[in-house]
Image 1 (spheres, rainbow, N blue to C red):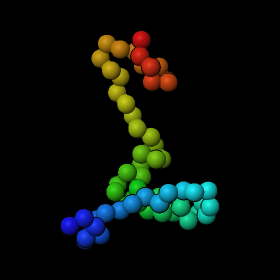
Image 2 (cartoon, helix red, strand yellow):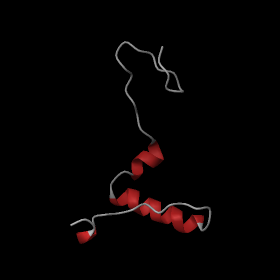
Image 3 (cartoon, rainbow, N blue to C red):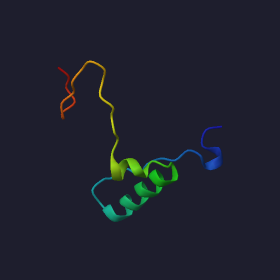
Image 4 (cartoon, rainbow, N blue to C red):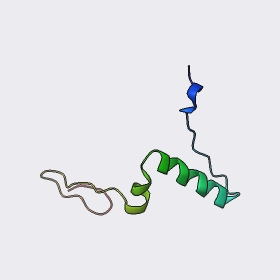
Length: 60
């Protein structure tokens, strides 16, 4: 049953109004899923074998 049990969390869509409320909602969702550290620290991507990747993500 889709939607039963409360496990279906939908991110609030920011429409330009009430930024503070949207920000709190997004932070709460990310923290509840244990991914808030990605927002604060970013994602470390290991270098590809044999390819050089520049800051924009294109490879040589």
